[in-house]
Amino acid sequence: MKENGPLWLILWVTLVCTHISHASLPEEIGKLRKLETLHLNGNQLRSLPASVGGLAALRTLGLSANRFREVPAGLGTLRHLDLLDLSRNHIQTVPASVGELQAIEINLNQNQISTVSPEVSRSPRLKVLRLEENCLELSSVPLSLLSQSQVSLLALEGNLFEIKMMRDLEGYDKLKLVVEWELRDDNNKDYFCFKFPVQITS
Image 1 (cartoon, helix red, strand yellow):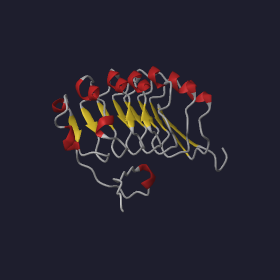
Image 2 (image 1 turned 120 degrees about the horizontal axis):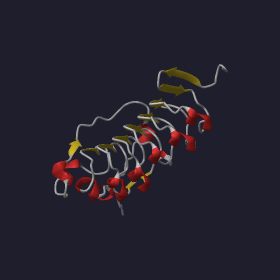
Image 3 (image 1 turned 180 degrees about the horizontal axis):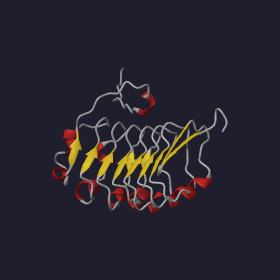
Image 4 (image 1 turned 45 degrees about the horizontal axis):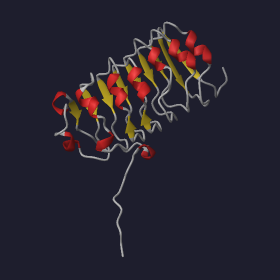
């Protein structure tokens, strides 16, 4: 193994990869059929090989602090996925394909998300959806997430509206909203979204 190459740590059914400077992984990753936990946090990844969709036993997929600009395709085949962590990336939209995911929890905190597809509410096992510190207006939060989904915990603090503005929305009472939020001083300022009102001066 090269000194500056990837560090592979395999422990039972867990794989942790760090120091990956490439934009993706080799297709051979899909051969680890019994893999249950895959942590790829803190790398330079921009995409995943299609073979990741063949990791039938995968329960936890950690992709935090990479360079993803969109939710990776092909993850809907991961039938046993419990947690998908895509926090601290550069994702701008939550696409309709997320509605096909089997994950119980999806973490999309600290991205640049400004739109969420209503199709996300169709995700059959999704209980926890974290969207803190993004670029969402209240109008960008689909009402179907509140009234027609399995989601019971929705984290929305740190967006472009106040949580109390959701009180009159249909389905608000069934949700547990995360309202405690702290600004993090972690040198990740590019993950925050600020929008200031336009001031017109004469």
